[in-house]
Image (cartoon, rainbow, N blue to C red; front, side, top):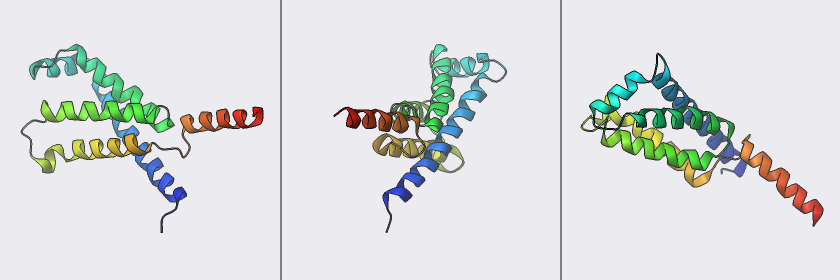
Length: 138
C-alpha cells in the first residue's frame, strides 16, 4: 500500500527530472547564442522571437520546477511547449527514436499539473508558514 509520503517522494523525483531536462534543453538553445534556434524556428514557420520565449520557459521554468516554485504553472507551460514541438519541429517523426521523449515530458508535466509536488517545494514551505501564522492568529 502506498502512503502519502511515498507518493510525494515519487512526485519529487519526477519534478527534479522534468525540471532538469527542461533546464538542459533551455540552456542548449542559448548556448553559442540564440540565433541558431531563431533560425531553426523560422525555417519551420515559427516566428523567431518564439525561440527566446520557449528557451526562457524551459530554462527558468525548469529551474523553478526543481525548486518547487510555481510547479503547476510551469507544468502547464511545459505542456504547451511540448504540444507546439510535436505539431511543428517533431511533426511526422516516428514515436521510437523520435517523439517518445516529448510525450514522456508531456505526461510527466501533466502529472505535475494535476498533482503538484509538495516535498521539498518552495511553494509548499511558504504555504505551510502562512498557514501556521494564520493558525496562531486565529
